[in-house]
Length: 152
Image (cartoon, rainbow, N blue to C red; front, side, top):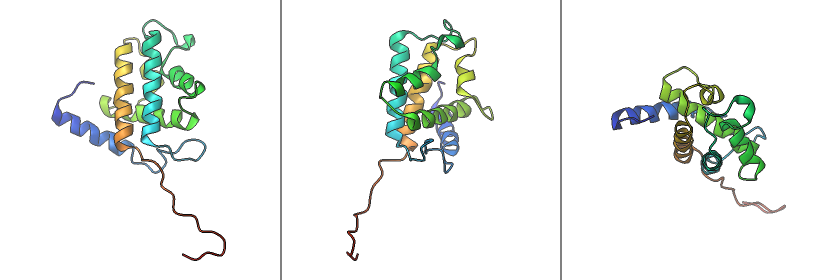
């Protein structure tokens, strides 16, 4: 995924386009997820894979040592939730789709490709975390509550 500056801006434009859909940043609970929360989930998953040496060339799908299971384990460890996990998957797929030029890339299939390396998986996780921080929504702001009988 190494690119020069001109193609980097084109790549970022493609990623931004993929992440512009109205439902992209909502988890299965219906709650909007912040870019920072998604980035933290991705970084925790990458740290787990790196720490434990989850190299895709060494492990089969059945080993439960892949990006899918790293995202899942991170959720189980309390470093994210199902919402951040599902949105992180969408962000990773947007990064991969833009980087490969394919019409769609399923991140699990990409992870399990015979030539995939741990370094490539970690690089994609870091790129997706950076994209989530840059393009994801910030914290929700709330309006002041109106007490019963109070006028604005």
